[in-house]
Image (cartoon, rainbow, N blue to C red; front, side, top):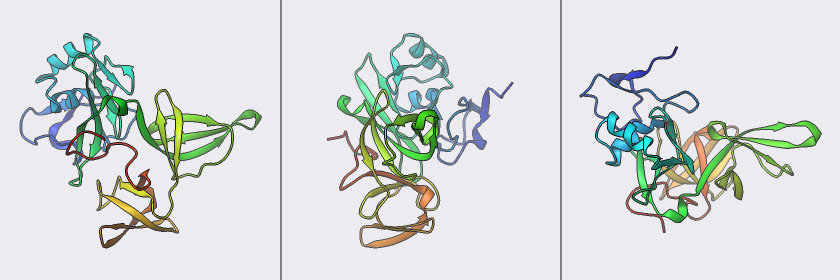
Length: 232
């Protein structure tokens, strides 16, 4: 049986929680990157929907909390990067993002954006009868009729998984950096060469691994990925 809790001092640096306080925090269920997700109990406390774990349990039992359009009951459910949390009773919606300080944080979004998410293509699998399955970020899969997609591209999807737009990893596209030195930064692709990504932020050029690049849009992000207000 897996451990039920995680020592506060052992939590990833991306978790924006105080290092002092109670010894343990809720350990999220397996299934998503520990570095790029938070247990829903922590998220509810961060947005002020609950103060204690017991209050989190009550909120979930009242069936007022949804993640990616699905009702949530388990306080250990991991809320991952770009996931959408909805508080149906109050009509508030939040998306989990990474700040430019490399910290996971929920930002409030408009209701009309709450059905959308951007997912990166991690792999492609050929199924029986020639069907193609795209294996997306953190375990989501979708079957497509033709091979018009590349690993590293992103998809703007609408729940349940319906592809609205392909966002290719190529020059002039906006990328969100999800690992390495520039975690949480947003830049414009200059080139992708041999597994390396060259991108620009303002007038400065930077280099990182292409696997750290997460395409989020063309001239502007397809979804809200930063704080400072609701999506337009």
